[in-house]
Amino acid sequence: MPETVEDIEFRLLLEAVLRKYHYDFRGYSIASLRRRLRQARERLGCRTFSQLQDCVLHDSSVFPTLLSYLTVQVSELFRDPAYFRAVREQVVPYLRTYPSLKVWVAGCSTGEEVYSLAILFREEGVEDRTMIYGTDINPEALRKAEAGVYDLDRIPLFTENHRKSGGKSSLSDYYTAAYGGAVFDKSLRRRAVFSDHSLAADEVFAEVQFVSCRNVLIYFDRELQNRAIGLFHDSLSHKGFLGLGARESLRFTEHAESFEEFDREERIYRKRGDR
Image 1 (cartoon, helix red, strand yellow):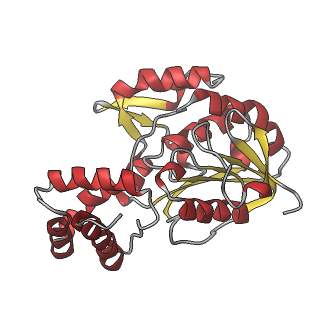
Image 2 (tube, one colour):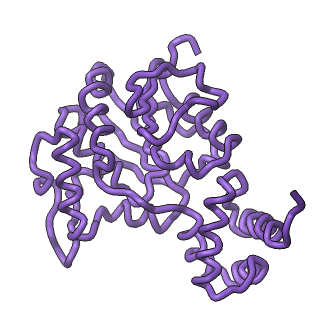
């Protein structure tokens, strides 16, 4: 099928974003990315992707708005509680045997999964030996993650998720209501580091025992999925764990044979010892 004018403009826009701002979205799923760029185009009052490209190239203040559309920021505390229950009941008993732990939450968005794991590890008695790295490419999302402040109206959902995940205390023990938000305890951030990292462009930065990357790979094409999983494989220590969540899978990726299924339902894998 021949390229349409919009196809050409779409690809040139991604190339411009890479050259000007060094964000590489060329390996993202085209259908999803095109839909979000159309929304950005409308929001910024541009008729075509070429007009949007011109706008972004000549006005740097526009780029943060565009980036908010290019990166999906949807998360919640203990999202998909069954996943966290599986981590709590099946993975933590193995992690507990390590003298020190490093955990990587890739694509951490505004930090909800990092706080969920920090709470979970505290409840399971391994917090003091654990360091959690939360990474994302969106600086505004990382600022929100660092702040650890979430809307109060989200707390009932967070509380119910925490309970379903097997929480051993009240979620209210971990936050204070102030100024219309829920401010999560700073002590939860004592063992957490939030940092910029691109699965499309950057390399491995640490050896870790557990990688959690959920609702991220669905936005990548096959080549970029392979790259990301290769990074996870290279960063994991011997027999380390990879959690993808129920919506994503290692099937059809070139690294599938390097992992064994640990929890089929929640798509938690374990790095093979011989790879």
